[in-house]
Length: 212
Ligand SMILES: N[C@@H](CCC(=O)N[C@@H](CS)C(=O)NCC(=O)O)C(=O)O
Image (cartoon, rainbow, N blue to C red; front, side, top):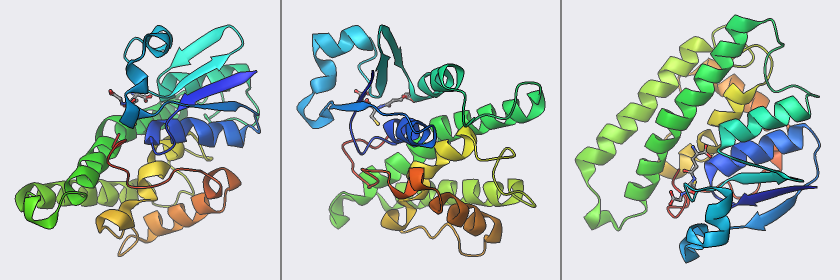
């Protein structure tokens, strides 16, 4: 039996829930309320010494970190795949690089934007806000270019697209229209929104308690 320790608005937990849904895997969701510091409790720290969600427990195996969890799911439950086929080394690297870029650059940047936008207007740092906006717009331009002639970032739908989806879907809440003047990004978002794993994703919101 699979258990997922998660906080619904966490974009990294959302990455894992998209993959679980793609692979039609049943699981129990165990809520770890970050606003109540439940991620700092000793029993949770035994699962992940970093004290972060998501953590996946599959029978006797506990795995933390969304990227490592999704690798585990791909190894253990390979169908349908969320990585290009073994042997397509260049495409597999491309998928992993995009996932890493989303996790370490795009998602945290949008997270900082969420935190800034959720402040009272008078308390917002307008320069920082502008810098963050420009940073996200630059990434969207880059993605628009990378998506030229492609349905998804690395061949078929993969962990590369999964990693961007949670924060792409809330950009309008922080005042960014990802699609305007970016036809490739527009088509990509529409294709992702056709997938039940993304349509039914819970917790997609600009919640500053899980900025990512
Ligand atoms: N690299 C990790 C990041 C996970 C992460 O940052 N989770 C946040 C919530 S979105 C968290 O648990 N934060 C609590 C903390 O850092 O104290 C992953 O991909 O799973």
